[in-house]
Length: 390
Ligand code: PLP
Image (cartoon, rainbow, N blue to C red; front, top):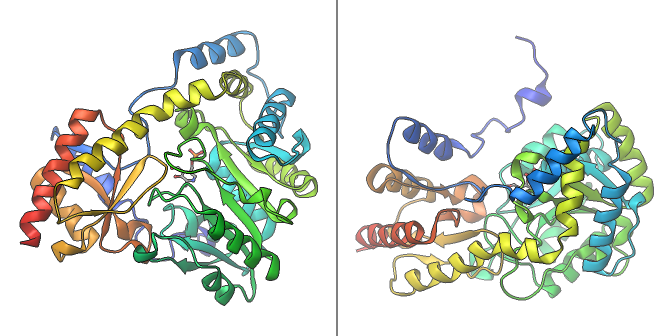
């Protein structure tokens, strides 16, 4: 079949990193009792009050084509949220509503890359990053980070790869590591972007899940508003993963072109979903904190379980719904460890290698099951790792 190289080459010829997740799902379908600590999906559903707003909007008739850039009220609500959180004056003309953060990631790269342009991204990374860059015609170039530096990117590593590159994609709070980039790290990144005329694509979909310190949006740093596209989403902050609602924040001119892209690709987001998002955003931080609370609690619980053992070293994390564990003391790769853990203990975690070379010898635990089940699974994981390490 003659399909495009663009689509057949999307994963770069290698696996897409989701193998273990699908294996665990198959085992569940076959009736096995698996503790699934794989994907970033809340164990609660979308709040009934948000569903009621969605229902009222749909029944009220908002089921036709909606405004392609986003409804005025949603663009307004997002602009207000961004202005309040970052201090950067932001208007609806700086906002494009997209079908989820993933569509925003794709659109952002479409906006700044021409075919064959290099696009940098930090490793470890959210599994779709390289494929998203390829889908937009770019050539993904990984910027390594190091476990011993807590996976904070080094500006000099960005500078060393910047020649010929047009963009840098970062993610803080970070999936998969749970690390929040520090102010000095972000200032160094901003400096590298300004010096090398790179667009910064800043994926901030976990901005409401910060357990220590603060989330700093690099768009707020000097000279960055004109070269930064921020990716946001209701998925993680409001447990609305299935509603597919996200956004891009950027300079007006870029957003104007991105609206043209949306007209020729997604044709926008359903109006009743947008109205539900307006309702959810108007609930303010109380609702966001309620949704983030289980992950805040489980991170502490996990720290207590992990404190009493030596085989597994947790990466010190400050945010997001994940915990990265260094399992190199077992002598296994992350892939082999995750595979063995699934087979022997019926616990599914993601191999670090699914998120790039920098996370080799690690596994990512999603804190997405109820507290008791999580604690018990972590105890078994530690015991299993301890036996291997002996
Ligand atoms: N960015 C990161 C870092 C993610 O972890 C995810 C989802 O897991 C996304 C973007 C995409 O989120 P969505 O498309 O659901 O908004």
